[in-house]
Length: 212
Image (cartoon, rainbow, N blue to C red; front, side, top):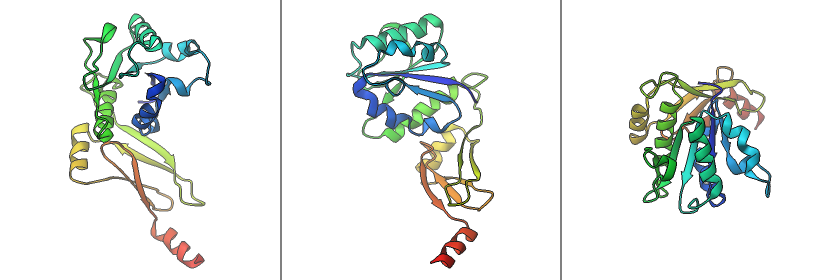
């Protein structure tokens, strides 16, 4: 699961919502291209045709703001014509229509975006799985340790399926990843894979005390 490309088609008024929903998704090792982050203000979205054409999946954000937006309709139509799968992400009561009216989407719960992000990750894990929806590839995020003077790569492996991750979230459990160099531990929300906190290793804590 590396190198795949996801294009997010959305209305200008939904940019902040889309950024919230994809903030942790963008940490995974595949490309996430949010339409209005890809172009300069005032420039035509036609410049994004290359991004769209090279996508493995298009996420279409269908909200009241998106109703009648010609760019979203064109991007969905282009994806369908090219055989690129489209995943609708929609408000309750504002379901998919037109080219994708028979495609099961993900409902946006604006009162609890954690649920929405979790369900979005469920669908992405299925859509980008090499063997189809029944395969759950090991996903991961990798980042440099944020302890001063460390910077060693830290990897959070996601070997659990989505059902297990939701159970962990429901029971208040966290995912952990450790830095092999300084032994600091990072904690993540199992539902959203969002960063929660860092606990410094014993050596780092000792060094901090000696400097104080």
